[in-house]
Image (cartoon, helix red, strand yellow):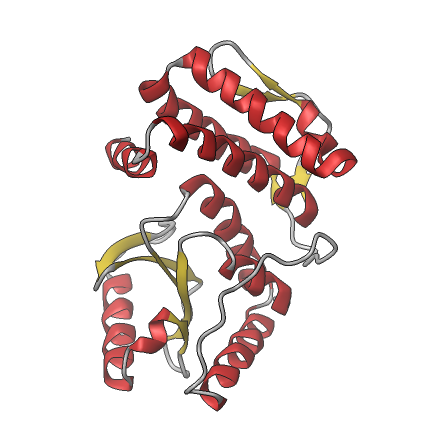
Length: 252
């Protein structure tokens, strides 16, 4: 896993911290998880692996409330576990895209990912009195070479459409998706031409009509910007829209 991949993930709105835990080796905690002392970190690691032993094989993830954060737990094989701490600012569809990419890259080369986590945590440990920097969005030329399946994105996108329709209605969300697309196209120009390959249907669902089966880093970034632009429009009408979406996700 490249440094840019973790930088990009930490720039996602609502992501507060990450940790890479090992069943037998040293765990690596970064950002909000570093507020825990060594005893708390050890107890958290041991407790999670005990819980994972009771889980059926093949489950995707689980989450729990820890202090004032929501923590997602993603197994990476039998030895490693990825933790992500988030707050209430999280936009779930945007986060889902990013965390799926991060997980895929960690699973493809866990040792390289471990080296990246070691680099990040060692920098913070070497300067414990410095203010933790706010992650910034990497430039558009930064790529990690990590792809994700178009089908994965479309499932997440249409799940968001389904939830949003219940609050704003089909006609409204169709207009919002179109307006959000135009906003991104005006801002990014030819870099966002991919968006024209998506058909926004009157039913409120979205269909992809292009040839791509996988999305590279730059294409995923364009799609994240489209989802965020859509979300911002929804929030202009319903200020607590994120909380409503989270509640709907729990009911689905």
